[in-house]
Image 1 (cartoon, rainbow, N blue to C red):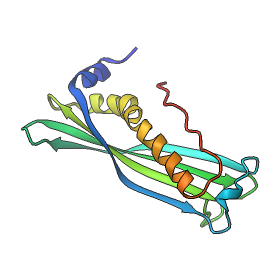
Image 2: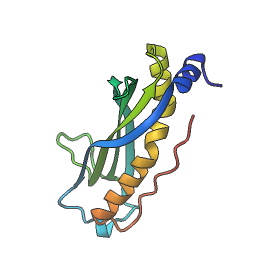
Image 3: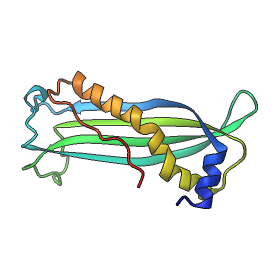
Length: 152
């Protein structure tokens, strides 16, 4: 059951846009994506809220911008990732900005609850498309299957 802070934030915030604000993909020189062997590699991922900023919209409306960072990488099962300067075989990172209009200023508890429960959910389809198209563009022969977002 959603907390009062979450319900209050959800009632106030209305999503306006999601944009890719920073991205990169890196393929290690000794890795050929066309010869990808999933039995020799491990996939890893991460996601984190980077920032929350108050916004002013044109029509005298206010709102918030939540910036969310997501990443994916392939590493060799037998590689020592703890060695200094380790570079994954493939790494794809994207930072997405989700903008919301809001009827009022939110308190910290509302922002935190909404960040944890809604922002990633709104950004996830954009991340799925970005990671799958980028993996194809670097020549990865198999599709990276990014599951649907699950609210926990």
